[in-house]
Amino acid sequence: MALLEFLKKGQPRIEESKKDDRGFLVFENTSEVIQAEKVLKKRGWEVKVMGPPPEIRKGCDLVIEFPLIEELKITKTLQEAGISPLQVIPVSSPLLEPVNLFQTKDFGKYFMVQAANMKLTIEKESLMIVNISGGGCPDVPYLAEQMVGKPLHEAPSPRDIGHTLCGYALQLAYEEMQRRCLQL
Image 1: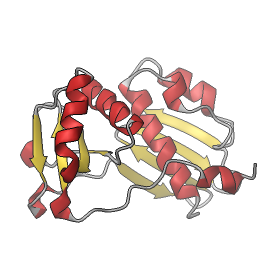
Image 2: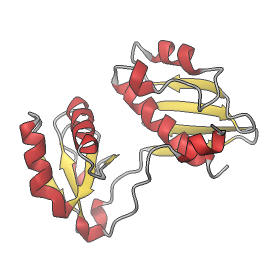
Image 3: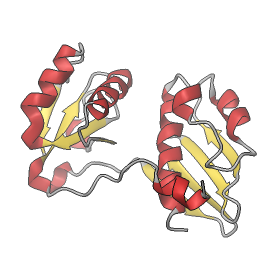
């Protein structure tokens, strides 16, 4: 399979919604956000993990943005899975704009995506992963050892080999890097 074809098969892009048809699911901790995201995506909902606007921070520094019209079905699904959000908030105010988790930096020959505290850097010409850094979780060195020196499309998914918040953040950076590589 050609590299471009592989990258195009990456995560489907979530189209931007109108502000008045989105909501946030607010959770107690990051672990619940990760579990909820997994359950909802498995059921086919288009959800997106975001940084919460300061006005609604409760404890966790992540929220799940979801289609508000699906609120009842989504909350029922989560309750059946044993995950209950602290709060469900309709997004109706421009002040409730979520914070993007991603930052990017073009270094000329290299390109970096940062998700939360985790950074993934590739060489643009070969798409070789040249660096993984950040976080403070015990699996970061292992993740780096398994991924650095491999082309992006051949590197293992952090989701499959990591088990911490840092592994989750690296997965987000990995998916965003795949998406961005289509634009390089």
